[in-house]
Amino acid sequence: MTDQPPTAPHAEHVVDTSPTGAEITSTECPQCGAQVAGLNGRYACGICGWVNHWSQGHGDLPTAEQDPDYPGPDAPRPTALRRRRS
Ligand SMILES: [Zn+2]
Image (cartoon, rainbow, N blue to C red; front, top):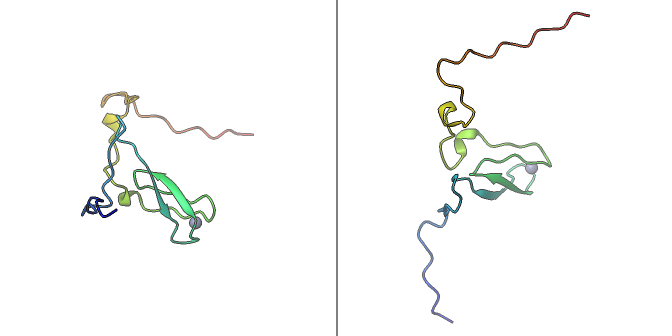
């Protein structure tokens, strides 16, 4: 009964089990108290609309170069959609 291992000092450590490093995490919404699930510490509450700041995530966001669809530094910039005239 008392043979339980001591509690790890870093209880908030997230074990990386995903090849992409993406982990489903959850927290309590500070605005309405609902349980909110998110990805790597980034949350959006579906009940009250609260979102946390992107910088509060557990890791850095990927850069454009890390996007599998990244067209390269010399790719033409996307053009703005033209407004239709009626
Ligand atoms: Zn909420």
